[in-house]
Image (cartoon, rainbow, N blue to C red; front, side, top):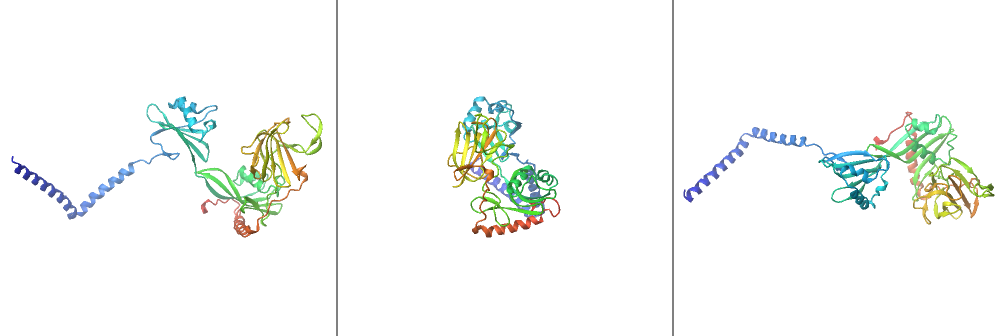
Length: 435
């Protein structure tokens, strides 16, 4: 066949193909209903395909469909190597991971009875690819065991939810709070707010409380109580009010007149079991076995009980001596200084020059120095002279400053109106729906 004949045949083939394609296109215009059905059928098929694709499984923010997920609880005395060994991770790899992650998370802090999750390969080796540890409800640590060893701490989103609660005292405050839907943490915060105004050992049947407060939530789990925002506590026929307000120098609680509910000093520097020895000019020393002055107040409490500074101030001494053991001394102003002796240990960060706020933990009860058992020896100076703190009328903290009084009044009116509506139906009110 000549070249000219071959070229002619190719031209005929192209024309036939073009005609056939054009015929299909033409039919779509001639019979649009049929064409639409074809298009619709094709479109539906695509949707069905999309719907059949499964949603990826997310865990700790990662797609985990390609892993075997193993959740377990850390056993007592179990270390990182022990946890990873069943998942084909050699001890040397665990050691190397621990070294690389030390600045991010020290694996020696892995605690017994805490949850740990292993993401392992789905092949026969079941090799760990990631390990996730949850030290607390607000964060988790992701350890990478792939080609590059490392770790990262991921913070969970914490949501603050306002709630209200109403209760009537029938027996104790704690029981009445629980019956109203509260918990011990809320009870403790309420007692702290009115520590100087109400003797909660003498509250009466029929007393009542209305509280607006915050709850902390992570996903669908409540993790704790936030601030108390406003309170009305009716005690012995008299209403006591408290409003949380920040006037630029730290937050505080104030009554309806703008006076601070917080005294300059706490009544006691810890939750104590009993006062084992008071300030006296003559006491038989249990260690030195002789009579001498005891210019402090001894609070008996279990070892490890937190010790709080009774007022704002600056640490002027923090160390250890033979007699005092571990101790901290705080200067509050030109008039008052306090000292805390025989600690089992001083709180982290407490050193000369550290500023502290009233109620901040500065150490923990112990029996270091000249002590026969666990207790805190609390000492109090006024104008350089050591005195009995129970003999002093403590000065109140500052009221709302003039420049903040308008803002305080506006805030107070809003909360007062809300407090008045709480308990009208004799039931707790949840404000989450209004947020």
